[in-house]
Length: 147
Image (cartoon, rainbow, N blue to C red; front, side):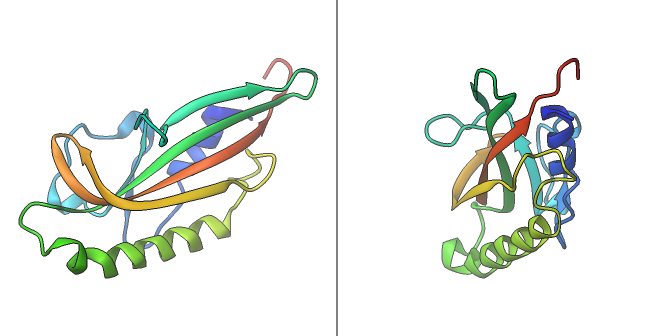
């Protein structure tokens, strides 16, 4: 198992009331009926990388990676502001945490359960600003020779 398997398992984490897309199925633009939605983003830049393989520890067979899983809850325009969407953001964070706790090592693809950093705020996606939650996973994956 490797990074591709772990990404597939992450996309398959079932969060109640949320549509989830695998990286190769993610639409460029979202419709309102698709929200809330989870997408694995290729990069967010700055301190919130999307997919950033980092250290290969010599002789240890480990790959360390940070993955951003973005939960888009509601468009900012025409909404009731952060106060109005805060209960939905909190409920989404709780639902995500419960879903991840049900399979913390993503079906054995991770060497250990991830450390997940959570940030709520406004995130642009497909030309629209959304109230969103960014879950940045810090993963350790075992590397298998030839696989």
